[in-house]
Length: 122
Image (cartoon, rainbow, N blue to C red; front, top):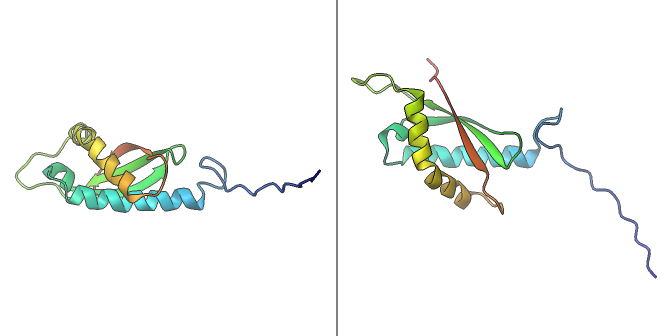
């Protein structure tokens, strides 16, 4: 009879720990930010084309990501865009955006994407 000794694997920090998200979660956030920035820029929707990704972070972990976007510049001759309108456009495009993210990352499950709109930096 063989007796095996198992050493405990050192676990990387999980999102929400005092140490913050682990390296893999941060790498995933970076990949998602780059992908969404490209996809939004090439989007057929002019409102979504004007968005830029400011940040992507685990919320609360890598299965759900908080994507912070800002309208790059106000469009001349148009009234300011209401953030609810941006949310509506993002909701309509969410399936396409998530499928583009799925194609760009190497994970079994594509994270859920939640959007936050912030004012563009002046």
